[in-house]
Length: 114
Image 1 (cartoon, rainbow, N blue to C red):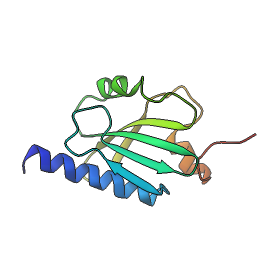
Image 2: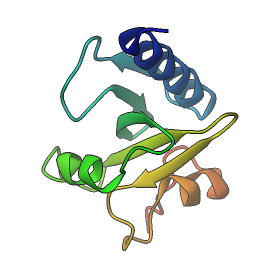
Image 3: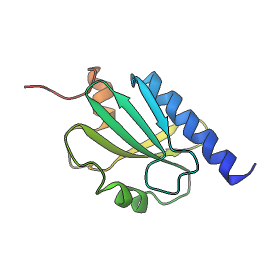
Image 4: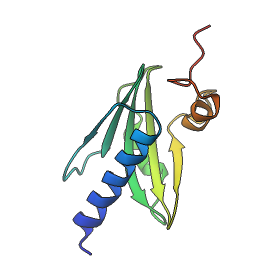
């Protein structure tokens, strides 16, 4: 399988996964060589996703996302696909809020409005 096709298939799969997680719209950056492959527009926040495969380094991809859309309503993530699942690495692991925590809380955006 050609590299472009493999990447495009992974990006589509990531988009489908975002929809299952509650995002309402997905934008895929076709043929992108930039830091964002897929954008998920969810209730109250946006998810910027770089998709890669197992064995590729994650940190340079996280670093490339670092300066994009900083703010409390934007999640910058690297998704690594293994054979049957995704490993999701949020940009700011020091933050209390991560995608995993948002899904566990079951709220529309995973954030407390206190």
